[in-house]
Length: 221
Image (cartoon, rainbow, N blue to C red):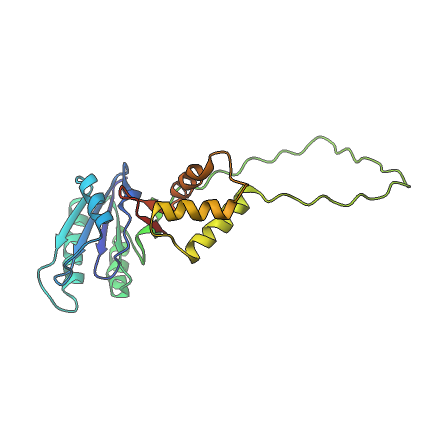
């Protein structure tokens, strides 16, 4: 399956192209006439993915100039490859009637408010392990006089600790890798997991909680 994504960059400017690397996804970024700069991280991602990303400058101005241009290029793509899956990334609900018409024609197309919400970019959910019942259950008999020992406090699970760290980072996002490392050290103190600070950062990147570019700039998603 091939996926084509059209991004209304005037409307949605948070785009992480690292999510499409190595996937059958082609992205068209439609840039408005008055947009004169792009984020350095995004520019670096575009340069790394020249065959998957197209930057399209809309020279015309007006309230609907970019929307109409996006609809034009979407229509051309649908005409050429009707079996592909299409997506519009925009918070503009004016696209919905057009999408409803295309869906009625059997075209697979959706609109999402954010790039990261595209369903075909999300990691697949792990399959739940099959539950098997034991042939019988042995219930130990407690002596009548045995006093109930107080339950020992449960240590915090690594997953719970990481979830609290993620919430902390989202409330106070660091701007650089150095600041991120200091925040992780201060948060875990003496209870860092086996991989240390680097292992925690790798986990945040794998789970798409944060990104770190080649210049050490950090973005918390």
